[in-house]
Length: 245
Image 1 (spheres, rainbow, N blue to C red):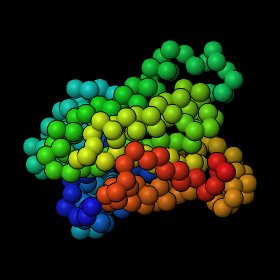
Image 2: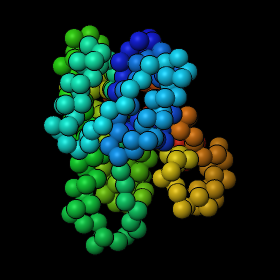
Image 3: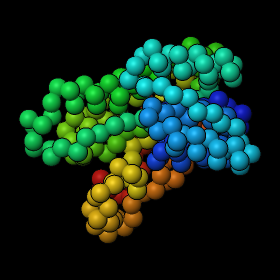
Image 4: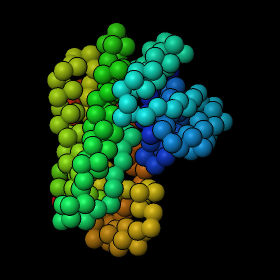
């Protein structure tokens, strides 16, 4: 699929992997909608960078865990641009809780994690589907190796990402043949999620087969590939410098 002039919505598109993806898609000529929930300054900065580089981008606020906000966001995009061609379900949250501290995994944390990381991705996919079905579209969900290994920043986070991997396969079946759905699964990535734990990240790198922590741009390039590749759907693609070998 040619990305030039395609309308792409990127949730959490102003920071980290979302920002790198927004900038990369902007350079490839896509019209980029940068969604944010709280990071207004980051989203507006990302939009400004794309526009200054000759691209076209706008920022739009919506909490993806709220179905009505997602539907309103999609309606606004369609009113402005006519349709939505591509969706990158990037917005996710976590809590840092020791895996063996089951009591700390409260009902509130479980609900919060699944509302954003799983239901939020479903709400966005559901909202864009009627418009994508009129032509051909593509969705990329962001998973995590936590969903494969069972390890991660917290038990609820790991389980929520395993659910994202399952959601990807189910949506791929439900939306074929007009909409492709794939999942990119990062390992450790040098983003602000490591704030305060930089030493831990730096100590991890030499122990990986490729001896490097992935960058947001590494993940963004694979997201773009998945959006472009017309012969692929329902795939869970790991990008982790060999971390899960």
